[in-house]
Length: 142
Image (tube, rainbow, N blue to C red; front, side):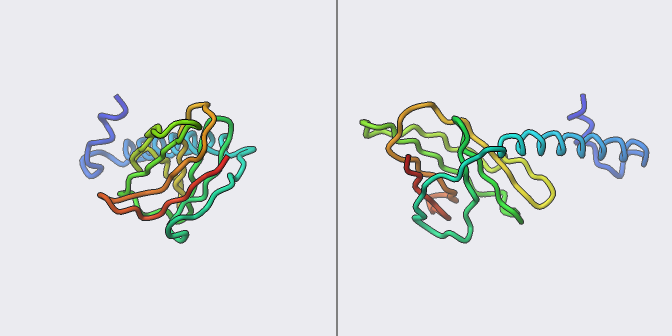
């Protein structure tokens, strides 16, 4: 029910309802932020090699079987993320690409996390791309 109400243009509803909707949205954002901050706790920066464009990249860390992305002043919501896990002794990779719409936006940060399979890997490739052009990319080594 809450999601149906959010699509009503704000100028069509009264100030009291507007304030209630904004409070609900703020509560959702704070809850998401707490979840992500919990994921960042004890998060370890992986050993990685920048392959392309370190300026646009997200800060990345890993915790258990998750990879966490965080960036300050995150304005660009269009590019898609690629996340390729290369299991040891395999020529094929596991494709875990995802859209930037899966990120949480809180104040001027965007934060995201993705579960990765618990396999021994030779490397992880991750970054962002638009159409067929990679904007930034890194290789993570075990």
